[in-house]
Image (cartoon, rainbow, N blue to C red; front, side):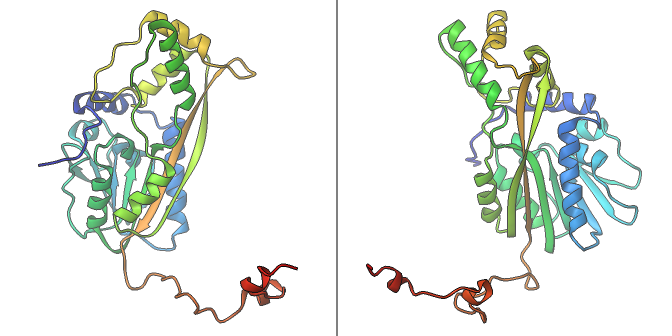
Length: 298
């Protein structure tokens, strides 16, 4: 029995992601920034990856790979149907990202592109990716998390309180930067690193802001049903949402980046405590004092 908490409704999630694939534009700033981050990290690694798995069809349209690399794109059938897949790219069709059934020990690079924020089983996703890597293979991921939409969360809560006297849960739980590091460690990936980039989007109206988030697949995907936003709440939202100096509504989106490696004997290992051959005080050009001496009163 699968005891993983089901935060997201499969039906709602599929409907929102179908909207992404049907209306996907390569110039979407969020997806552009996400792809740039992955491309930059791959370019820094001085290694030629021969077999690459890209999870998330939009990633294939934006990531830079060469003709010598074997690329497999992994996503649902409807995603692959509405994506521009080159003729030399293999396709791996899955029912959903929570259970991908990836081939074992096959890829030297696995890229999870903008899917982790919509999964019920994020730890399981990373574990499946780990198992599909060859030794010393690299896992990279980019997804939406952190404090994304904090301005909208606060404004919408206040708007509902003013109109209805109460508010409903409308936003998906997000993975924080600290969570990302813990996920990498739980998946037993070596040399784990997690960081984030904050994007600030500007909108002329709150209606435009909400519509754009739905188009990007960031609408309500929660299992629990919530009432539709009424006209009165929408009107109150504009008054509770602060505008910047240019009269626009700002919205923060945090992109979380993760990288880790399948363990291998050739990887760098931390030195044992006490194994240093040079004193830190010598490197800094200072005098060394024992801690017990520093503790003595003068």
